[in-house]
Image (tube, rainbow, N blue to C red; front, side, top):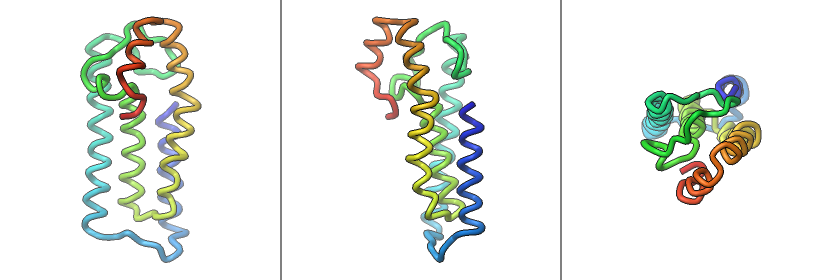
Length: 144
């Protein structure tokens, strides 16, 4: 499940900040503010996506086939707003923890999520919704 992966990456960043800072720091009010904005933006993206999925009465579970192809709300801007929210939360917490070395974990997290979850989900959507998904895929980017 993606939240487990997110929790693992957050734990790695926290451990790095706590036990292996190597004298590197971005600590400051601006960094804290940016970290908070990223976490807040991530939570908001996830909430907006969950509300939209619920409104359309389809699943939020990654390994289940959805009943409907949701293309409204936040899904007009991103095909994967929940995963985008996860990445924003990770980036924000890395900044809040002042885990400079762990900034490298953000693109690694995105890569893992894309390979383990997004590509299989998109294959399922492609098989289930065929032409509708092809049109959606052309007009809406995967991340932003």
